[in-house]
Each structure stands twice: as structure tokens, then as C-alpha cells.
Image 1 (cartoon, rainbow, N blue to C red):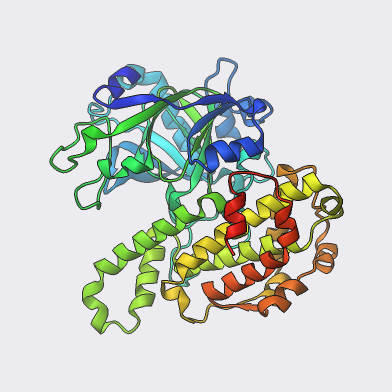
Image 2 (image 1 turned 90 degrees about the vertical axis):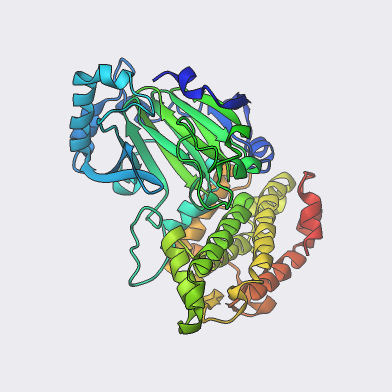
Length: 499
């Protein structure tokens, strides 16, 4: 596969920035990439990963025998890259051993065919690509890698380690969208690829190249409309094939950014950036989807848009439907992976965890001004972001009491919430090591947390976005001394003006 041929016909403005992550602080990463929602390639973060030793042969090629020997029984979904099914590639179920057998045969017998493959000339040959393998969940004892510091504030996967995103007895929990976590391994031969898309939930993602080379093409969110049809219903599938100009009239006006990702490089993909990826060599990568306070608005925007589409599709049965809103929410969950109530549940639990952090600084935070500022700055920004999204929720069905109740006292007794709180604690330890939050065992932690302020403020029950906002406002107003000592940064004024 020739990268130059693939890119011909596209308007490419430049390349993604590449920086040495060892010279980058977490605060700089937040300011320059999370807040600005900009992609970047990071180097120097994979030197000590076990995956970089076990998964690669001495010649730099994938160690397929290692996968077959150690993980061969795993059942995975495999994309048939040149066989389209609706808006994605057709999926088949294989064991890792079966997939490795296919890969070895392809490399040994069909190399010449593979070298000549382009998106419009694959003949009848299948090119199979393992995607969305939940490797960490399946092999928790095998420490293939450690999540880089810049990506540790991962609310999505911390939450899914304890809770399901959607609850419905008749709903298929483990499908492509609603699943146990969003930590994946991808692996496939040269010539495999992923169609144009923006990431699930409009999350951030990071992709670490353990071996091989990938070509990425990016489109900024402001140009999203250029790859959609006139009705904003369907998007371009493959930017390297002949795109129907009558269906996608703006496509030729799109201006792309590109990057060639090398071995041991990690790419950060911001929210809402459409991208297409091609493996220029046999490749293995580790990929996470994630979101936190900095892109929470993106997730809510997606839910609102998908909800409106789901409602529009069944509008003609509104008058004969016993509970039209519940049906809309059910369809939203089936299509997107969660609905308004799932997202509200997620937001409430993350709010409680952050509020408890703010009410219970460790001894070092109380005595070290710099530590206190770093820790409080982060926590308050989280709460301000949640509050902003909760304000937007008030205009939806969430404003009505539909039996969604969260009792602070009951939640704090929930062992799953204690685990979530502990995981968030450890995350803050890593981000601001000068301000240790001293995670201890559950019983000591449970007894030592002062959550009376939360209950005394507005009561123990949160049942709507309005009551969540009241709770956050109560705690933040009592935290004015902390706010006044925050480190000066671009977000300070918004924090002080938010309540």
C-alpha cells in the first residue's frame, strides 16, 4: 500500500504535531491539547511496556506465535476490511488462534496480492482486522502496559469497572456499543484499515503503536458537515475511493491533517475529529476511548442529537404509544450505548466522588499551598463542567421526576461506589503526586470520609439536574477560600463566575 497514492486527491494542510512526552507536563498537556481539543503525537511513553517486548520479534515484526500460545483461545470480533455491511465493515467471530493462522497464511502465500491492494482493488480477497479486543478485561493479570499519565483521568473506564452504562433486562449489554470497557487491542496485516468515523460517545481516544506504521487522516470538527450529505444523515465511508459528489457536495472542500504514526508512538485523538486509519505495515496497537470533565459537553451533545433522531424516526406512533418518552430513551440506548438517564446516573456518581474529594483534603493538601491549588483546581474544574452540563439537562425529560433517585447516604455505602472513589483517588495521586490523597483500605476510608457537608447542604437525595446543581453550588460556595487560592490559569475566571 502506497501512502502517496492513497492521499492523492485530498486537500492536506499539514501534519499533526509530534512532541517528546518526557518534556511535557500534565498541566501543559491539558492546556495545549485537552482544552483546545487538538490532536498530537507523543513519543517516549512506551519504553518500559511489556507488550513492546513480548508482542514483537527481534526483526520488529509481530510475534504471532506469542499471541497464539498465550491468548489463542480468546474469541474476538474481526472486521473484514473490504466487505462493507451497512455503515461499517462486516464482522466475523474468530478465535485468536484462527486469526493468527489466517495472518500467517496471508504473509506466506499472498504477499504479492497484499502489496498490490488498494481500497478499490482488493479482488475477492478478505483482509481481516482484529478490532475492539477487550484485552485488559480478559487478561487482568498480564500487565501489557500502563496507561500514560496524560490519559489517566479516564472517567469512562473507571466507571465501567464498577457499573454497567445501561440497565435493561431485555437489552443486549455486551454488544459493539454498550460493553464492559473501552480498552482495546487492534491487530492486523498490512492493508487493513478503519473507515472514516468520529469516536464512540464523541470521546477522546489514544492509540499506541506497538509495532508497524499507520497512516492517519484527520478532519477538524468545524468541517464535519463537509463529509456528510445535505441532510446530515450519512457520512463518507472511505475518503480514498471515488466519493459521490452529488451526494456529498462539500467533500472536495474538506481540508485534512495527516500523520504517519511509527512504532512506539502514541496519538491523541480529540473529541469530534473525524479520522480514517490505514495500516501501512503489519500492525498491533493499544487503544482507549475515554472522557472526563474536559469533553463532557461533547458526550451530551451527541446524546441530544441522537435522541432527536430517535424521536423523529418514531414520531408517527406518538399518539398510540403508552409511554413515548420511554420508547425514545430505549431506542437511544440501543443505538448510542446509553440514554439520558444512564448519563445522568454516571454524572451524579462522578459528582459525588469529586464533591467528597473537595470536602476531604488530605493533610498534605491542607498544609502545602501548591499541592492544595493543583488538587483543588482540578476537582473544582470537574464540578464546574458537570454543573454546566446539568444546566443543559434541565431542558429535557430529566427535569421531571421519573423515579431516578440517588441517595448520598446509600451511595456511599455501595461497595462499587467506594471502589470508584478509590480509583479516582489513585488517579489524582498520579496526576498531582505532591498532593497524596492517601488511599487506604475500604473500612478506614469509609469511616474517615466526611460527607455530612453534602447531606446538610441540600439533603441526601438527588433526583434531577436541578437538585444536582443545588448540591454542587452549596459545596462550591463553601469552598470560596480554596477558590481564591487557585493557581492563575486560563480557566480561573470561569470557575469564579460559575455560581
